[in-house]
Amino acid sequence: MVIDFLDKFSENLSKTTVVILDQAPIHTSDICMAKLDEWERKKLKLFWLPTYSPKLNLIYILWKFIKYEWIEINAYSSWKNLLNYLRKVLNNFGREYVINFV
Image (cartoon, rainbow, N blue to C red):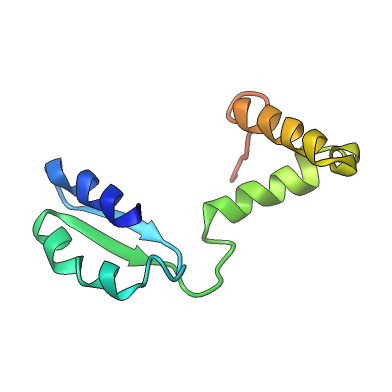
């Protein structure tokens, strides 16, 4: 899926575009590495974050806010409850739930 996405994403780039990836095995696999030259010719470059760098990976920052600031303790009382809280946060992210980096 990642390779298919990057293939399609790179089809119509008009300027050099950098995609930032973490060090997940799928992002560093031989098959992904074999596509680097092709993607670079299409103006797509990949940049990998250092191994385990949660402060640089936005999903870790988002998850930290979800876990410690936005979800109430009773969200963990059941799987269904947790899913409902997560849906509420994700559906209202950017409006009711905002991360300020200032």
